[in-house]
Image 1 (cartoon, rainbow, N blue to C red):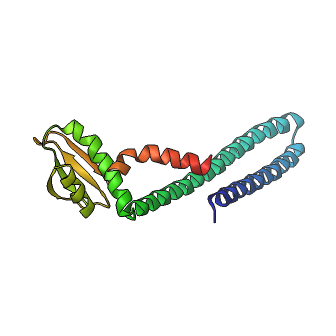
Image 2: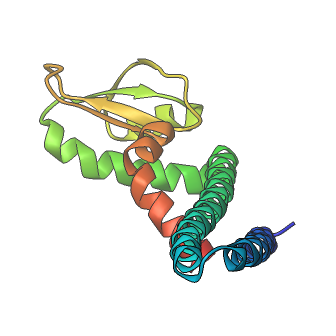
Image 3: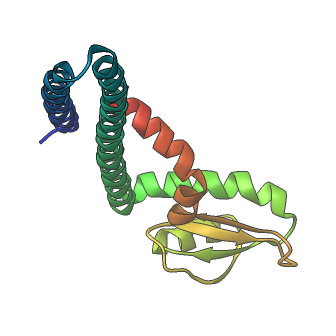
Length: 186
């Protein structure tokens, strides 16, 4: 079921709940009015007005709660869809073809080593990273468990730049969430 259909279904359910509440409110108002007519006109009017206000307030509260609940459910579904989009992005990153992956890592390394000074070090995640490090004459210090990317360090270990795909996604997650949300739900 698509997100739009789920959202529409939630809105329809909310509207049905609101209609039901409105019908219940009308029923209660009629009962109060009949009872009030049996009493003295002045007391009956006062009682009716007070009851009507209470019911209207309860109606507003119930309506507000129904809207709030439906909005919360919509947000929950949107979050699930965004999380699925993140998972698909991770899968795509895992499946990057070797040449495309090498181009990305080469750009990262080329851009980053300028900031690290002489004799930077690298921790790799894939075999392709080793080849690229050798081309740049960067010392390989180990391997990291990652779907891809590298961790670069200055010779004195004062600067560490984590460019593993997971670290990049974690740093950019909020911006990416906003962009995905805008693409999917605007």
